[in-house]
Length: 132
View 1 (cartoon, rainbow, N blue to C red):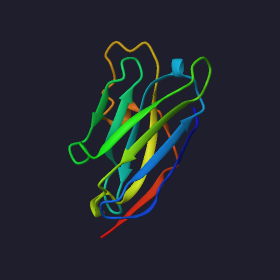
View 2: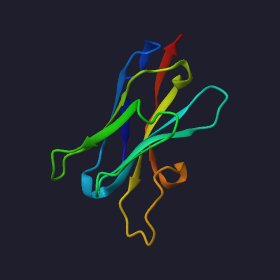
View 3: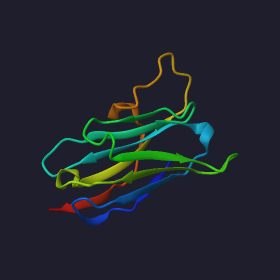
């Protein structure tokens, strides 16, 4: 599965951006998709995720209420897409944002989509810079 993220850029504090990510795989091959970010000198951290089976969404505390994850496909073998609407951006949101996918498999225990190691496929990242 290949992932292609886009939509990053430079925005002022309080502004908005919408990140997009397309996966070269249909819905039946993907369990969940998520967004992670990595600021300079920091470790990669979880931002948001969506599980396709039931549409459950998850957010880190730092973005809850400001960011919204969504996505889907047009059905059949169509590619999956995931979006991250980011509102009321703050300088501390500055980071490279990565989209990632958890493959669909016969899990005995459902993956914890807040954990990076659950994700097998990663995109190349898109830079978001929030100026103060």
